[in-house]
Image (cartoon, rainbow, N blue to C red; front, side, top):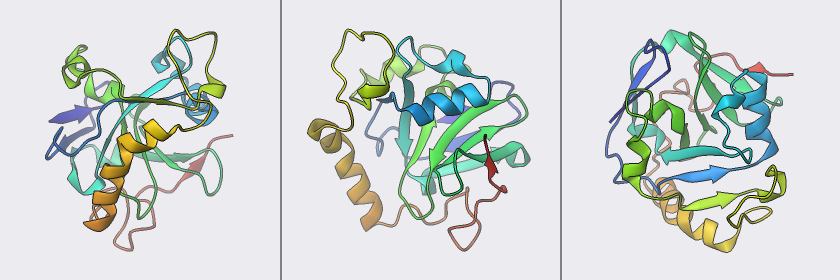
Length: 186
């Protein structure tokens, strides 16, 4: 499975996808909304302020071209690493050092095929409803509900057990230092 930025200068390949992913997830948190507003990509939020991500293991993500366009953004000094392709201002995904999660933005999957994510089935979890805009017609827990934890817990446990965060293309050999100097978005 290939993903890319909007202009195609950044491309990556996913191995074992969708086998190891817990599927489509929606986050309505203020940080996800803030990121997309700061990079002038609020067009990628759904009508209730949600961001769709599809988690994969970092060691199953291989950059094919355009690594020089990857930019690490944070909303605070110790915040989540939020990766964008600065060639066309496309969000790519979110990760933390030594954590088996790379949450890929839905738009990186749908550049070539707008309907691709529908093949993965429905959204399996929605979180952080206290930040949702308007009155969504579906239930979103204020934070993270038990059902939401059950969707991602097996993925995270397997990732920790098999150290699926090692060999992440987003960090230098120490596994902690991002390959791109983090930019704090203010």
